[in-house]
Length: 391
Image 1 (cartoon, rainbow, N blue to C red):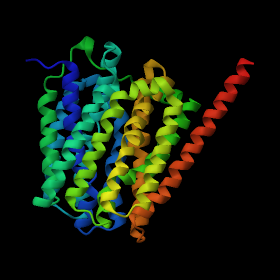
Image 2 (tube, rainbow, N blue to C red; image 1 turned 180 degrees about the vertical axis):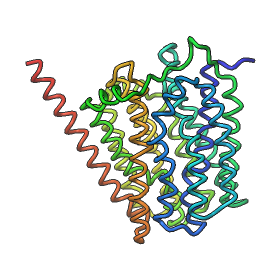
Image 3 (cartoon, rainbow, N blue to C red; image 1 turned 90 degrees about the vertical axis):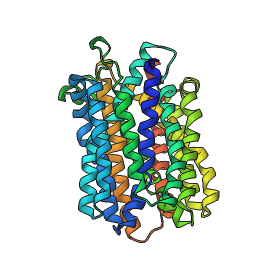
């Protein structure tokens, strides 16, 4: 039976996030087990966002010319192979080198899936970005449990085996992507004139600044969660359950995201998600019992899933149709790129200075709260400007 376009996208999202959930939250813990310092860990963790920041806009333009299918097929198989190289070395240079190679191919896959999803949602009103992206949350939830159990049974290196197998699955299912000329996903040409035009958009710049700050404060949740839990006495299995619960909490928010945004509006929804991130980080800093920390993940759906959907929708609202992909590339560069780099080095520096991850979360809660104030002030100034214009 031939898979529909929607179901193929859901399967690809599921597999991509199976891959991501297996290694991303555990990589810092793995580097620590190999004797790397906090600063060295931050170097390795910052490779993937740095590659996202440097390569993604060019990768999108290349995919437009070469085709989405070819890009996803080749990137997935090369990414799958790259994870196996982690098993061969444990020095800073070796780990950073493998991460550079892996990130070059891994980073481009999810943005292309997002573009395919946005294309489908425009073509068929039955689907929304959130209703397709929800499968990624299921993949994260499933892999969180499996990875934690296998780490306890084997060791931390199993995360790269799971990542490799998951990405091989992406390769297999991407072979069936329809890449007809008239249906080919469109990533608009990201040239310097378009970039200059977008960077002159004041509202977009405020959004990207806020996204950068939220990423800087929230990246520690993604990369240092395992260390935080183990500092408080958690086993690898309990860490896995926590990661799995995160994925489960994403499901309803992705599914109902379109309705929530329609009900409250883009700006109000964005403010709610940023405040939820602040509360989440604050709770991490207060709670020292790893089992009691699990319920904090109830906020994951609001602070992450809804946050990301509303950012994607906000960018679509702020930029012209001809620059949609360029706008999305800037969003990815702000959150997954420069924001994650700053967050990793900030967290690594503090961790190297003997600060516990829970205390780092408290400082980061302050950063995100300031971002919420920034957004609130921006919303009020915009409202006042609109009122004076009408008057």
